[in-house]
Amino acid sequence: MDRELLQALYRYCFCLTANSSQAEDLLQTAIESWLKTNCKPIQLRAYLRKVIRNQFIDDCRRLKCVDFEPLDDNAPALLDETCLEEIEIQHNLIGHLFELLNPAEREVLYLWAVEGYSAAEIAIEIQQPRGTILSRLHRIKLKTADLNLDASVQNIGGQ
Image 1 (spheres, rainbow, N blue to C red):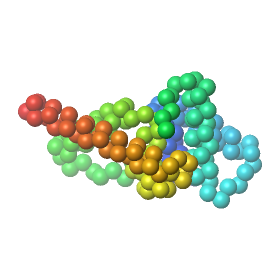
Image 2: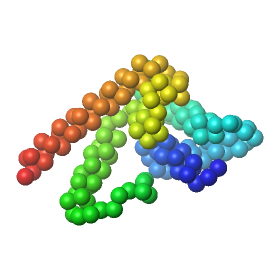
Image 3: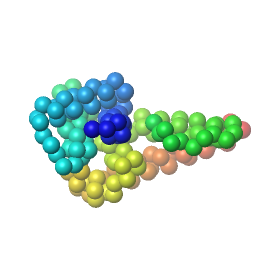
């Protein structure tokens, strides 16, 4: 297991939990579980994501904290203050969007936007109907559009 895989799995955990310490605990629990089984899966990344997801669901059910419904090192260099301001605005919008999404939507967004999966691949990965995935993607896009509209109105009002 290399550092890149650990970072990707941590990002997945963070996407599910929306909390860095919970993400670290979730990742550690999943890796411990995998090591105890002495299992040698062909697709380690997919196997560990499934272990992480199942552990997250178990934890949420145990705590009854979720209503279940059917850091980039290669970032471009900043060129000027305007670019920095735009990045800060986008960062704030993404942070606000992240707060609006439930764990199921954050998981779909992660697999779609970060991992590059199609709706069909996500459906297979999390064992849910493709229509459910498409519906979640649609809700994410609507929430994003609402955020962009709100940000545009605030920018116009602030100028």
